[in-house]
Length: 124
Image 1: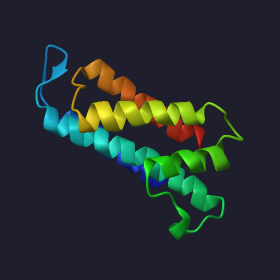
Image 2: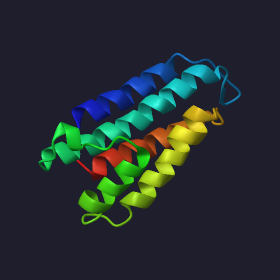
Image 3: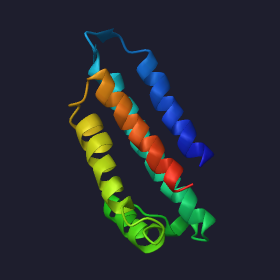
Image 4: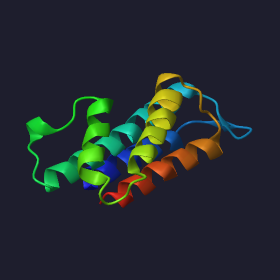
């Protein structure tokens, strides 16, 4: 989990260097990079959990569908809402934040990173 939290801190570090104008980040490229790293933090947290439970490196998921399946199989016994949270974070961090670059509002970005940290904390 340390690695996942380190990734999340790296995402926040990137955002600290981005100029803000009227509550919006003025340069979307580093914001997209921060979202990509935050999404990777989620994946690293899931990987760490799975490795701790005895899965081997080669058994770790290779796709978003693979991660969904592993969450269903290994994590939902603890919290049935985790798959919904994962899907929501996938859309928020990876699709809207990184891939499409739609999120530039400082408050929204901070809430997204907070949601990512909450997810990581749940699966510690």
